[in-house]
Image (cartoon, rainbow, N blue to C red; front, side):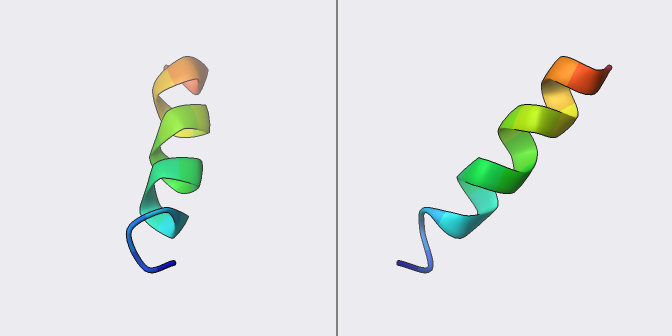
Length: 17
């Protein structure tokens, strides 16, 4: 659970850049 949260947060951030 703790390993999947940051992934959901970093993926959209990378696409935003």
